[in-house]
Figure 1 (cartoon, one colour):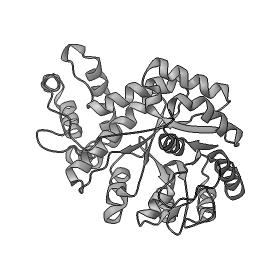
Figure 2: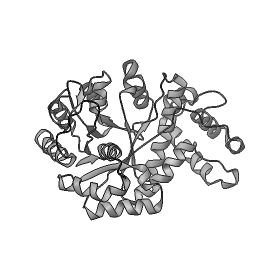
Figure 3: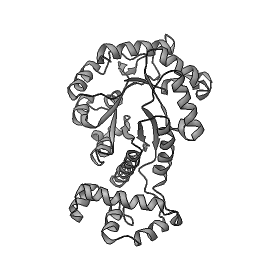
Length: 336
């Protein structure tokens, strides 16, 4: 399935002073006319029941699918202390309390990874996930405690329920970046929140795919590797933004090979001489090599064309025409 990301339309409409979201009807019509079967919008489209119904109606009007929606959020900060959570933890059996404290972090300590809990408590991964799931499920039902999952996770999951009703199958998330380097503790909290979010989406029969920009590629891709290596592959997948990996100094082909089993979708854009091109085509990233890797891995997920404009990007034709040319290129190179 080949889709188009709406980011470039948001850029263009903001530049022209036009209302992007009020123009979605027209935009989706252009995308369908350009030959796409799918579109990737933004989770806030489905923040309410009415918003989700409107989005679903637009998709139906143009016979488009939206297998994924894009979102972000501050996942690296620990949640504020919650006395109600402490009251609830005191009611648990000792083993359940140990597991949940280890996963949530106790006091000033960051949460532990599942592998660390396996070693510390002598439990299997399956037992840890079962205990964690049972405890969190009960925690959410204890309204008298007013206890909730960490705020940003809960907020995203609430919107995901409406997105799910609009037939969205996955969320693509790019955790908020920091100007300065994230600490190891912050990366642990981020991985923990991603795991929690992935588990919640799994209960909705949805997937979670981590997206990357170039910031995650700093320090030999320290943050991207933490996001993937410190999370459960059964809960957290990968939306590989191939060009951002390249621009961040990484080897996109090596990352696709290393994390191929976790790739749920790809964002496709290219540049020539380091500047984003007007349409997807041959350039700095060798997409023919990318296509060969995906074929070898048996990849069947969405390919999402994400054009974007920066200083120096040529603008010689209507955006709809650039999307049409990009769609033809995907057909030529990827065979879909």
